[in-house]
Length: 222
Image (cartoon, rainbow, N blue to C red; front, side, top):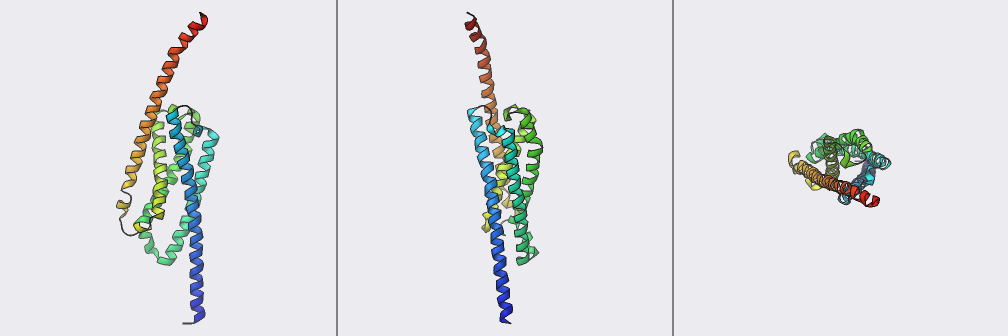
């Protein structure tokens, strides 16, 4: 074989590897940005539920900024992910799409995208109107909590699948996703209990304030 052909082949392969490395790096950064924002917001919301009062997360400008940033990161993940899949198909053939780990990751990202649309289209306007998570109607509050649990678990699960190369071809799709619904339900139930406790505490505070107000008014008149 001509040495020039061999050299060109290895040069092309090296270029593709560096291209893939750059795309994977962008993919990783977008995932880290999204997870960092979601995690920070979730912790802040939980902290405010424990402390009581209105969360800064329910500020309309903050919520819109958060949604836009996470949506931008999700868009980068889609573009970079498709590019990575295209490069791997060129290198390994269409059989690469049969990898259960890859199928699980694609399914979760699709669910994340749909869930994000619902959060932006339904939950955010409802929060802006109610002014507080605790002031939402029961059905909308349950939906918001489930969508939030789904979002948080999905981001971390997708990240785990992204770095979980040992999972490739070793487990079925059902086995890989076995813990996924369990974590979502667990997160949802935990948030339901927390918000119910916070709501009951706020009701007690309001009743105590209402009972104290007439007494203070009588003392002031006396």
